[in-house]
Length: 273
Image (cartoon, rainbow, N blue to C red; front, side, top):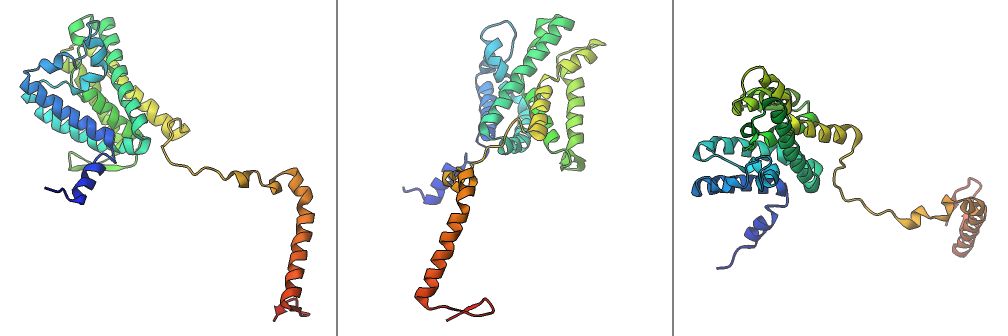
């Protein structure tokens, strides 16, 4: 059966906008289903576990795709929506390559900073294990909020809030909830809360330099400059010297044209046939 041309166009253009964001959301869904079918075996290579190969390498960028099982369905839906909304906006602004660089850097730095805090203050290797998308989701939301501080969005589809307050709320929740999710209690929770913000620091750096100093340039197609215009003789010293001679030639051509077409000059300075 022949496929209509419109169907081909839809399939071809599906990844024309936000390709990285769509792939990430798709991989999260695939990882979730694979975790259920394999009873969590696929997560053995996605979970970040320091000083244990291969997890200390694959987990640096794989931990956002590690889901626990059926209980993580709500986490998958919420995190997928956050990545699609906020991450898609970042990808359209930065372009796919810079967006990938941001995601990889934020995921790796977040895991390494958290590990450093655990080994300095907690000294429990089991607490340093990272699985789940929330570090990456927090980085994406904070980067978007700092780039669009005055945008108004509906928090939980009900309460209108400025993007800057959404960013700060995300930081506060990450500060308190992420250590609690790793069973950290006592005064050390307030210390390790700062080490949970490694990815947020990367988001701040990318957004700050992009907004203030244009360190991250938006991808755009620029027309090549016309070299003939750049190297026109009138733009050089020689062109300035030759300008009177070119003006004399122009007047000579006009006079010749007037004689050929029999144009008579009136006293008013206007021409008539």
